[in-house]
Image (cartoon, rainbow, N blue to C red; front, top):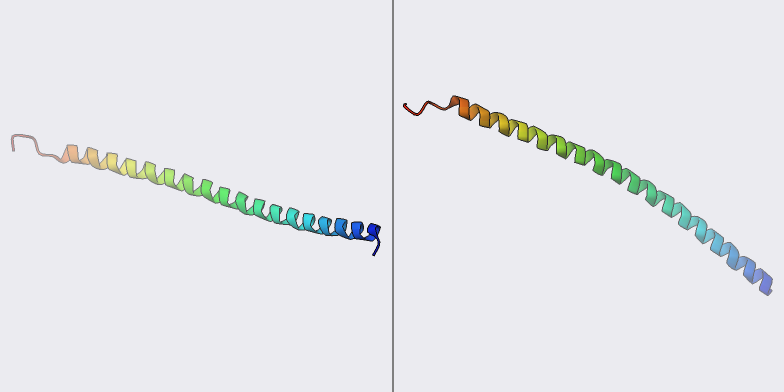
Length: 73
């Protein structure tokens, strides 16, 4: 095998590896994007739940104050 053939083989191997790496990076990027969408969705759900619990808590507090018997009882 000549020096030129060896160089061509090395370049071909490098190109193959680079192609595989680019494919892997693209797949990883897709996974990261999907995970970010899921995180955003879960954060929105958590915020909605927090608001709902706060509303329930405020409502319960108002209910307690209106249901209490006057002090003379």
